[in-house]
Image 1 (spheres, one colour):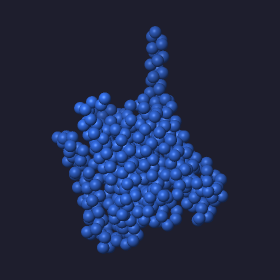
Image 2 (cartoon, rainbow, N blue to C red):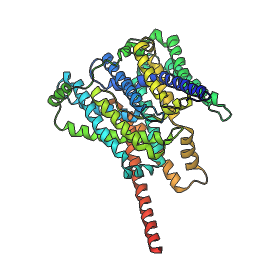
Image 3 (cartoon, helix red, strand yellow):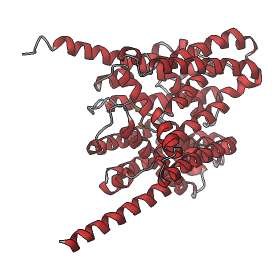
Image 4 (tube, one colour):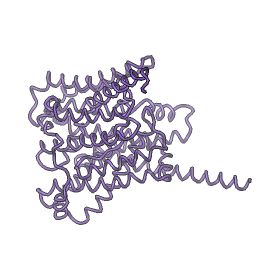
Length: 470
């Protein structure tokens, strides 16, 4: 028989999960739309239909993650993230550019999507091997923090070209003013809510900074920039047919592969397999970074279950024509801080996204592209948390810093600098959005591999010393 004293607590927990799921769906929908714009612009065809398809691919991937993710106990939000999405964009664009017929470019891109996701899922499963997990456990600040930070750099580079370009051409001064004010006020709100003397209720209001920044950017757009906006410059998301981003878009079919096989050179397919393997490694690192550094870190003993689930989600997403996905640290932290305590919050997040897609697309269509850019900018800035600033700057440059920490700090900033340079230089070729995270990945892999080998040699020497002593 149910204890009556526990019923109010259970109802309170359920209501908290419902609020957290719905609230975070509204908050992060701007991020999903922004990622959909970036993905859609890499797809061939008319801009309006490509953008709508890109948004469907991103939001659909989140919904599939929410439905399948509810099978796990921990409330973790997963979906497309900047670094892995960047690799996916590069691979799809690479495939479409080599199609010998314009009509075959979209089927070629979708066939490349399915190929890369299946290979990426197989790569993700390698994270369940104990030896691979041991290697990843040795990751240093150069990889973990540098990877997360370079992802933020990739988001900023992507949105700067995809979202702000039109508004900057309409009015650079007004665009900069609206963006700076919106970001500053939102960050001020977040900092006020996160002060050490803040109570738990005020801390729960911190995620509202994203809504505040988006609302201010929207108000500034309609007050100052809307009279000068054109249909394709500094417009609203509705003008780019985001309202058509429903779950009724076609996915990947056998016909796509048939067309792609006829239109693509034979050497393209091994290259796509290689890109898929890189994509899987990026997805693996994204998920493990989130599992280790969320507000309530997941114990390493259950990492394998999460990695298997993400691999299954990506396999399911491949025939549906959806984007890749991994665990998200920022979204999960926002879910937990908004009173989400069980997996029901994840399920409510997906249900709220479906409701937004079906019933609120007219409101979403009125959101300016400038506001989407501000939302993504805030997310990128919030990725650089206090632990990063403390761990890299103060420990690496303090008077008592060890040589190893100084080298780690230099490696971190080297990764960030290379990320920004690669993203800026290569963006026009479709690879820039992924250049930064990939650069961080390769630099971090070299650093981590060296450290892992050193620790392994030390362990072998210790074991040999124990055997000789015994």
